[in-house]
Image (tube, rainbow, N blue to C red; front, side, top):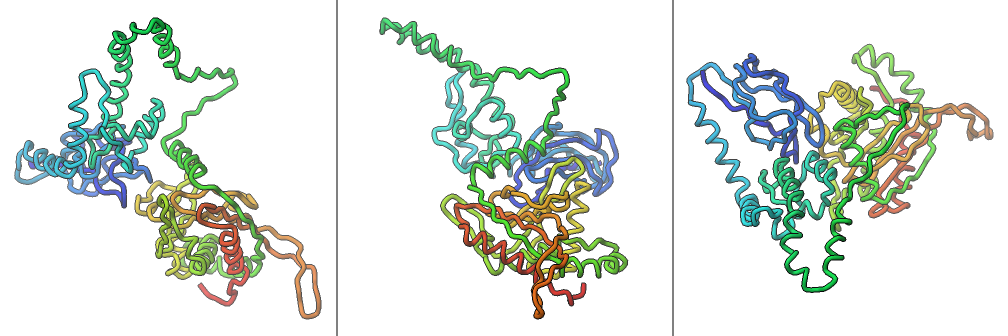
Amino acid sequence: MALVEMIMPKMGESIMEGTVLKWLKSVGDPIEQDESVLEVATDKVDTEVPALQGGILKEILVQEGEVVAVGAPIAIIATDGEDTGAPAAPAATEAPATSAAAPEAASQQAAAASAPAGAVAKLDQPATGRFYSPLVLNIAREEGISMQELEYIPGTGKEGRVSKKDILEYVESRKNAPAAAPQAQAPAAPQPQAAPAPAAQPQAAAPQVKPAASYGGNTELIEMDRMRKMIADRMVDSKRISPHVTSFVEADVTNLVNWRNKWKNEYKKREGENLTFTPIFIQAIAKAIQDFPMINVSVDGGTIIRHKDINIGMAVALPSGNLIVPNIKNADQLNLNGLTKKVNDLANRGRINKLTPDDLAGGTYTVSNVGSFGNVMGTPIIMQPQVAIMAVGAIKKKPAVIETPEGDLIGIRHFMFLSHSYDHRVVDGSLGGMFVRRVADYLEQFDVNQAI
């Protein structure tokens, strides 16, 4: 028997750690190669982690709820083969982890070690631009730790990041600190005659606990799940970061509707998939982005980043009621059939929680089909760090004036509203308005003679 470490795999661009949600196997259980062993949550998606080697689950190194850095060992698997010795494996993995975080983490640990006993350990300089996991941010929010204060907490994680253990230790030391602080300042206080009065003020200002809310008997309290909390935080951040403006255009999509009605049954028989309106909307948006590339940007401080890749995200409703936004990479390079395949694949995998972090990373523009819920229009919230998002409403029949060489006639046409929300820091009303108008033009001028 050989003992092999199972490590936390890299789960997508910019993802450096994950939270263990649930172990699917117990110690002593047999594991097949590529069989799922545990569920992991990142700041982008929940996913299952398979075993790279088959064997027996010998030991679980990380418990449910703990945050683990990418590349860190999470379990020991006993496999068939020559025994290389259990102690050697951990030693081999600890060395790279230590060296990778050496410059910044070592200085942060030194700052923490130099702090007096009983004092709150803090960095000399704020660690600006440091990544914080959703778990750490939630703990900070619950404990009333501001972002500015968070930047001074020493981190022992990779590249000096603050781990769950770091912030819990900080919270504990902060709770103990006030008891020692007044005693240290007490000798200096008696010199002024009015010292006793100020001494009572810190105690009066200390309680910042929000009073417990009272609810009646006909009230049900529902705890937000992890994804809903994450969505809530991101929506609040987006409204705080971006001044939202929304422009509306009504488009006559009669030709588009007639074309789809002509092809949808044949496409279903041939491909075994549904031909929906979503890929048609995405195709029109991709064309409009090529005409107005400054919509396909993001903002980093005082810098505008223009993206050459057109990666269009689409909101997908999950069985839990939450929304997730996978994106189609290089949507401008796919024909209508290719877009249909991509849309159906992402939607199907999203509904069964099989999306990968890479499916959710790298989006440059987003479309939300609020018409699928019967809504005629909406004012969508921008997906940060993107600067625009479009909502497409329900398609409705309406009487309309039809211009003909013989004169104007009244006829029944299919109309839909396009709602375009954009970040007014970098997108002015002229650009935001012209863009949504161009998308409507492409939909109205849809080629009814094309095949799929």
